[in-house]
Length: 195
Image (cartoon, rainbow, N blue to C red; front, top):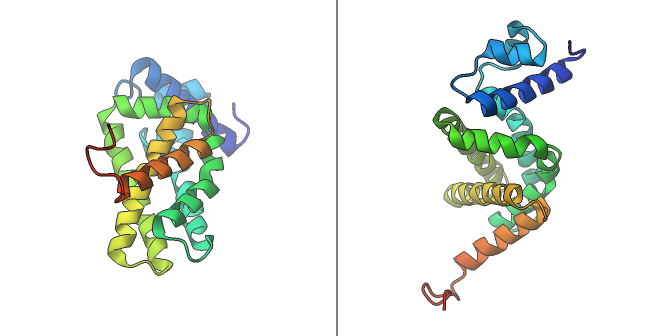
């Protein structure tokens, strides 16, 4: 039996992930997750409102850290550079959770209900980032565009990091933002880049 709330939460997450991979998300119940974790189902619901949310734990911590990093970033940065700075400040949260992140992304990709929840969470995260940019004085439309583009680039860097563990998340993040800048550069005509 787990001795602390944090330990029970971690065990529930691990049990859920194992069961989702073994049986699939739809065929796994909260009672089975609780039993695998060595707790009762009531304990599951003390930690998570539903069986989807177990895979999205930590999202509010990431949001808070990211918006704080945007607020604390040096002045004079353009919105995308400001976001890159903020993403680099919070990447340690993801680095420490890598053993859970890789199988989690796989389960989400294979499950329509989880993909829907992931999209909703991403939209909420992008809106929180846009609000943080607005508080920094970025106008509404550029804030929203930068937040949505930056969040997509951050997600792309995370997937690249999961696929290629030889490089750090920081290296993938820097490369992704370099690629984004190159894509936006007016000096590379469409069609000429492949020649």
